[in-house]
Amino acid sequence: MNTTVTKKTHILKIWVAAFLVLALCLVPVSVASNRSNALLFGGFTTNQYPSGGQTGGTVVDISSYSTGVDFDVMLEHGLSGVMLRAANGYEKDSSFDNYYLQATLRNIPVGAYHYVYWCRQPDLVSASTMAVQEANFLIQCLQGKNIRGYVALDLECPYDSQVKLSPGDLTTVANSYLSILKGAGYKPLVYCNMNWVTNHLEVSRLNAPLWLAYYYDTGSDEFPETNYGDVMRSLQNRIVLWQYSSKGNRAYWGGTTDLNHLYYSFTG
Image (cartoon, rainbow, N blue to C red; front, side):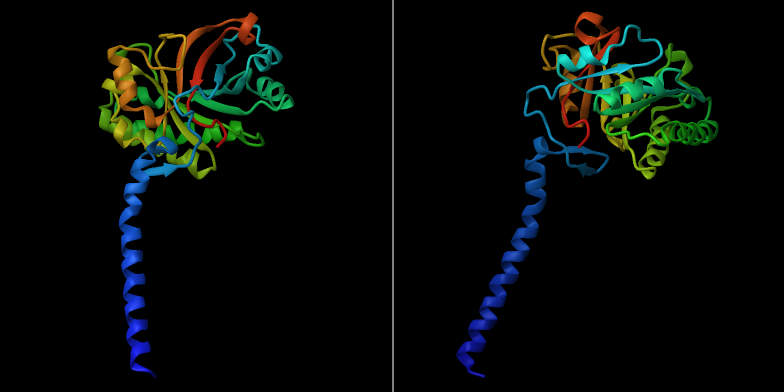
């Protein structure tokens, strides 16, 4: 073989190898610079469709406690999806099947949430055991239904004194619950209020994005200029929904509903 050709081939291979190394080195930079284009949580990325600073729409969450629900009115005002309470502990919500049917007949994307009781258990072992049981019960409630939106773990207690587990243990059990939902093919989400975010969870360890409750209606989807608003801004790449009001009314939102700003695709 011609020596000159051999040298040129060798040089070309070196340049190609160098280019590949450079490209690989730039990958983390590219991912980091595109935080606004992806939902980041738990050490991995789920491709979603961010609002680009503007609202991604409104999602309502309803349960058997809601009254006067009218999905046609909701659709008239730009509804992006509904979160239905599927279960309360080991009890299926009495309105779930009916609301699911009404929503799907109108092609409204449906998500679900589960008000759990494992978070009130006194120790890690009992909480872990109950979390598995409750997660499996929820999956039974969802079987046969086309859940296009998120499935949320609803963490709340009427009183702080009912929370016995440490933030570390609560987060560990929450991740176990979420892994069961993910293993069943659902998109997990964590619902809680700002007190839970700041005092009862290690949010950086949660393997799911967030649905945060903070009743402070700014008139837009911009987080408020408050201490909790500052916390929300620090978590903005992880917040899918902000429950900003419990005052949805029949005239505009088709019933007594909670209202949520949507920041990422509900079905993506």
